[in-house]
Amino acid sequence: MTAHEPQPSDAPQGVSTPADHYVENGLLVYTAAFHLERGHCCGSGCRHCPYEPPHVAGTTEVRA
Image (cartoon, rainbow, N blue to C red; front, side, top):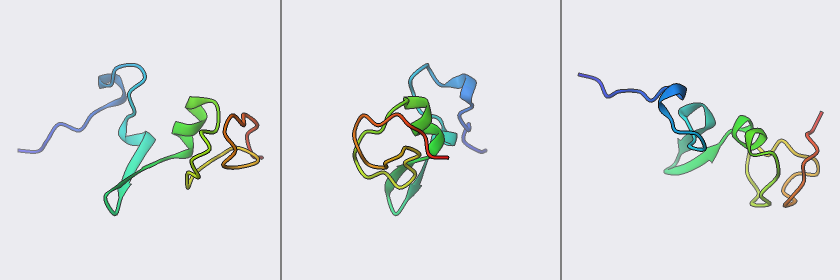
């Protein structure tokens, strides 16, 4: 028997789905898609920050 894989339709609004993140070395890594959905940079130095300049809290301009 396999575990139920969450589907986007299963997640309540505002809850990340498997397409939004992955686990690497025990750490949760958010994808660029997650950051774009958020709409602004959090300033935490995220690996997949899609904003320009990257890693500046409140930035909303998306890199080309």
